[in-house]
Length: 201
Image (cartoon, rainbow, N blue to C red):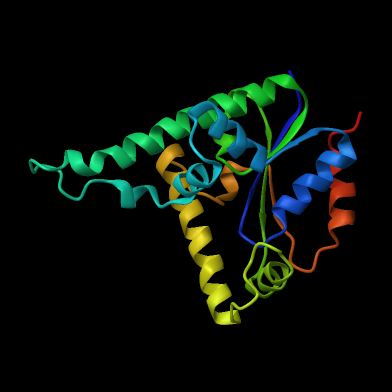
């Protein structure tokens, strides 16, 4: 069986950077945005659309009119999200079966539980997350610290709701992971060197 490392992470905690560096250190495949690309190919939906569906609060897609004759108007959103999640499961399993790999996000720890992945959750304090986010090219520079803090909290809330909706588990709960890693003021290179020792023969 291939060695699989899954990484759940708070927004701005450096989990994506950790995953990329760890994959490079170990010579494993690295999957993150590639998952969205593959789902897009399979569903013939745009990557942007798939990303939006995955990052949306799943509860907001539930029909608020259940029991009324026009409930069907809202049900398409749920069906669409579930269809994308099914493709996400197939994509992750396919990736896990190809080779040793590091997979970031996408409920991979739960979806791939049959593959016995090593599950890591990465978190950090708000100040650290703010500083990391300010360095990201995909975070708008005109955000004030207050706006950016609000954005970070919203992304994490959505991730928690998405994870709970599809797994029934609590995102970030230490009982669901092998390691919970606080990257506040951490030297990422040293962290990667330490973790990589667990996987080197």
